[in-house]
Length: 164
Image (cartoon, rainbow, N blue to C red; front, side):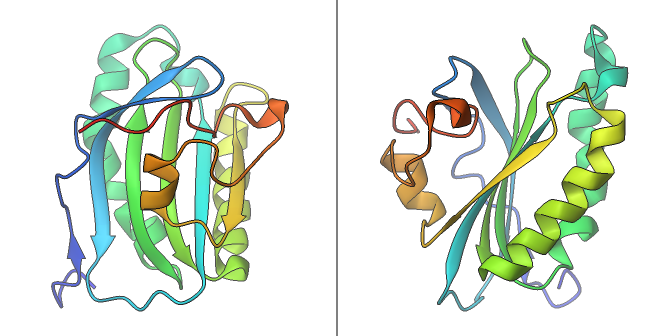
């Protein structure tokens, strides 16, 4: 995709702070998008994790933000990938990825793979995912409460619309 200029790094949301229903906030530090990809069965996917080896070490956290771009082939090569917002929280050291995916089964496959890879390196209980069929990324970002969810799912639900 990169060789054919189908992957782009828009800056529309970079720098935006997202407030989540669990009381945390995260900053968008990167965006990756596939240009011209059809989107008929959109699925929102949110993944979170907190890497244990980064706990309390600010410089490593900052280095990981920069190094994350090397992980692009891990998700961009999966069938159905459409876009990703990369988020971090410098206070809690929690990372989130907000993805738009084509199709529920490809999104579940990717989520299961990533959570499985991240869990052994993450603080207990922090690696997880949430998939919401039919919810676009823009609808999710601008209309908090979209996609429903129970109180225990507050980590992925937005508390307020994104401000650009």
